Image 1 (spheres, helix red, strand yellow):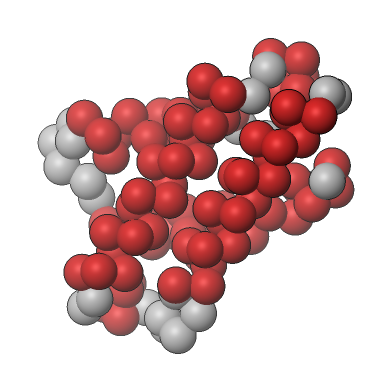
Image 2 (cartoon, one colour):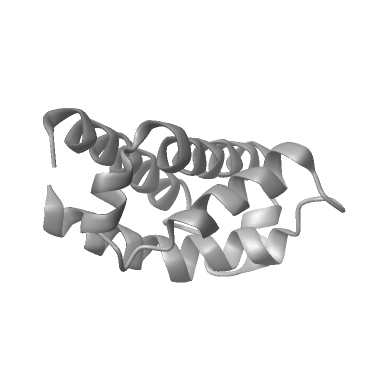
Length: 111
């Protein structure tokens, strides 16, 4: 993995950390949805993660870290950006609390 890919992974990790920190005091979907600024900040970071995963990270790096669902990261970005049938906040919340900690752990192994 080259230095450029490491920088991209670091940016993804920064977006993960930002999102998780925004939600530190959230105990439920209702807490999350109650703050529109928090929701918008988290959704923005999820879009950035998907975009970086698709367009900035090399195919070689994705193959080296094959246990990360790269296509799903970009798929989430597409759902947010294009608003296919609206953005389902339950999916966003589940992604933040269930998927981001796992993604963070996997990326930290490589950085």
